[in-house]
Amino acid sequence: MSANGVPSSGKNAAALGLHRFGFGPVGDAITAIAADPRGALLADLERPGAGRLDTPNLISSAEAAREVFDFRAERRAQQKLALRLQKAVATGGENQAQTMAEAVKAPGPASGAPPLKVPLPQQIILGEAKARFDAAASADMGFVERLVWFWSNHFCISGDKDAAMVGAYEREAIRPHVLGRFADLLQAVENHPAMLLYLDNVQSMGADSIAGINRDKGLNENLARETLELHTVGVRSGYSQADVTSLAKVITGWTWIRPDDPAHGGEFVFMRRLHEPGDQMVFGKRYADGGLDQGRAVLADLARHPATAQHISEKLARHFIADDPPPMLVIKLTKTFIATDGDLKEVAKILITLDESWAAPRTQLKPPAEWIVGVIRLTGAQAEIPIGRIMNAQVALGAPRGGGRRRTAIPMLKRHGSTAYRAASTSPQNLSVARHMPTHWRFSTADLAPSPRRKRGARSRMPKAAARP
Image (cartoon, rainbow, N blue to C red; front, top):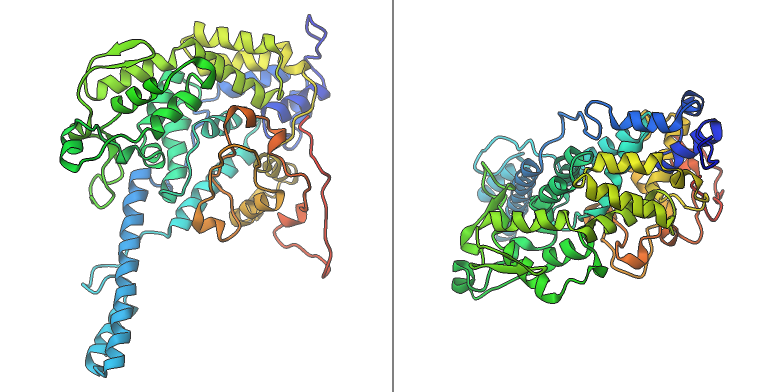
């Protein structure tokens, strides 16, 4: 029992810790950590390699972009050959038709190139999703994995632009920094090609840049606006439209190498000919034109802005503790964020050791993906359930709802009923987990089972809500 009368040990406290800060219990975890639940959560932060995945079979985002580009190019070539074959048959050119028929059957282009080893985009993203769910389902405590999921949602992207890059984006930009400094995490995210592609910064160029003058084009402010509104200081910090425009100018030239480059396609590059020349004012501070370093300097200051500390602390408390978190909890998190220069491990330690985090009423609802991981952990059926079935179960539980913006599902997987790598609205009025839950669920654990056996016409119904302890 803590000094404030909040239970600090026992099975109830252990269950609360596993559900509130992890994905729920696995095996005899409740009994194993009952003597010191907070200590067990702290130990999870200190594990060697915490947050990272040991997945040598998964390729980088740049490799994925190049391979998918090659795959689609080959597919287009095969489709054109098929059309030519149809025309040849229609015109009676038998010899030509025979030659083209052999080319269409060949695994590679008509030039005789070796078969491409590239998997379909769906295969890439399913492999990434499996690694992600496996890490969550097999974690002893799951706190660090929950932090990974939190930060991936905070810096969310969508697979609409390039589905093959979204999983690698989390591995490359989020996981290495999830227990590091927020400033490093912010830099890694904002210059990752997946983010630049998703928020159209690859199309942005300064109106007075060399490329802007020659092409009569200008700014795209999407990334600048999201960086201020969602990623750092938040909508209540007092930034202006002029700040958005200035930041958009600062990060012109932050782009990627197109994936048709066989050596470096899909990688980040700073192109000076796209960059708006001159000094810029952001949040009342002047930043000298230093090319790439100008943008890095602005992000470094945004990461350390008090409004960013407040914004991040509120989101952490709202995500893990309550839709209306204790004010003192947010204050203490904010102070720790500022005092430690955005050390995310230290902020996480404060989150799990403060009594306010354990005394809050148990009212939150688990989002579909977390609920599914919890079921898998309880049943121990992780290895038997195909990742496609897990992803389809998210659809059965219902897509996140809210009045603000929503990230659209990856089209190729949406057709198969999947909402993988789709984030709910992150606008301030829709941060409540409870508001994202569907009114009714028509879902059973049988939908996850490896070999479901149902009587014809049988239907199962879950309760209207599954409360997070």
